Length: 202
Image (cartoon, rainbow, N blue to C red; front, top):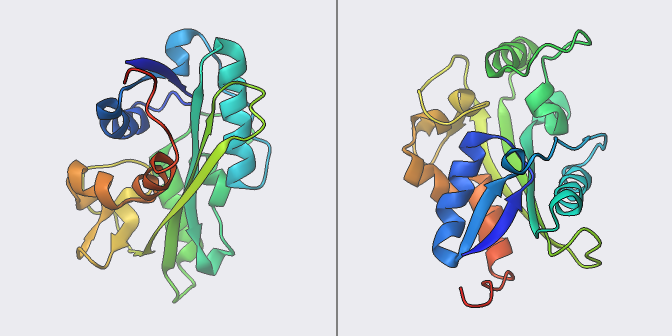
């Protein structure tokens, strides 16, 4: 197994990604386990934030790095919460991120709107080293709509509000294997893996 640092400390995201990468010979290690603090994410696009996170993790560890920047884009809200998805309901007081508060704010913001269409975006960046001049960049989208109340116990983030028409369920009502096969992150990874060579000896 070849070690690859994940520029995230999100345990559920690690589990999703590791299930896909482990059979290919990559051992995915969260940056927190290596003492790497989270990078700043000051940019307005997913790709810029993902690049910043990947380079930060690679610089700190000397390992190849994988970063995912993802979020929910709601049509009626002009693409919000977008790159602010995880911090959507945070105030300047700096309280911890909260899925519950984010979902509550989203429902309040959508209340006046009839259009409930939305899509998840995932941009995944792989860098071989911090100064990699040609990072691999892949993007995936998952389209659906926002329902009016939380449904399901699985997933994380906005999954209980994100209705997937092809299954007739929210993302939080899907089993993990199904979600991992069809989600925005799965689609981005599929695109990335088509160009990502297995590690030597893997």
